[in-house]
Length: 229
Image (cartoon, rainbow, N blue to C red; front, side, top):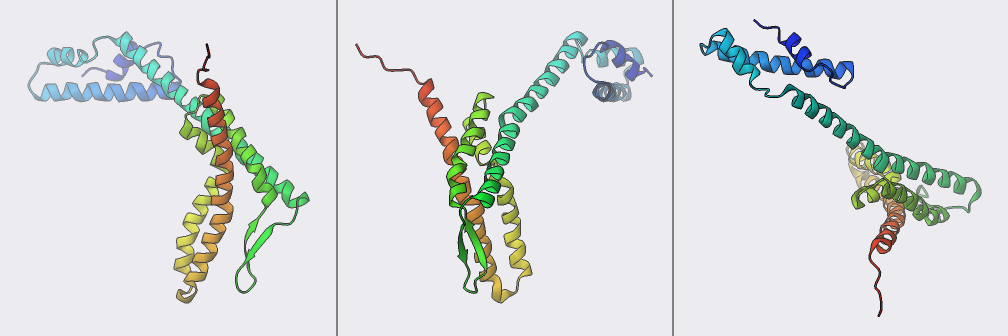
């Protein structure tokens, strides 16, 4: 039986990928050719005829090598674009918004605190922090825009800081309702929903307003001017 691994390595020599990926490609393609060859042999074809029909599945090995490298380059470009358009702007927005919150907590005015009936603090509005969040959202959206991000990616980059909190609250609310006493369900639900309102929805709106402003200004700047005769 032919050594398909050796045959594939020889015909795809010069494949410009790293060693691990190259071995995976060789192994996968060799396994496919071997399976086709064995299938033809079980149908009664002689060894030489089965070999020829199996190799005929790849009409041009150079073209196959080129298409593999193009697909790999395209995959790398997609990953690089995702990092530049989403993760880096989102991280910048997160760091900037959390840094502003730290400054406001240390040097800013006292927050507006909403209490439950028994005086338990549930919601704290750092008004000065909320007023600075549009700037953070705009910075993230601007960085994403310069990297070629779509409007949807710009919006996600803007509200990136509140996404982890949103996930936490979406998990914590059902968990709190399951763990809490049945008589306290309404208190637990009200507390979590109020905290989600203060730490996710309101900051998210503030961040998104900055991102939407960037999109609005970029659309106006890119739209053709109206000339008057």
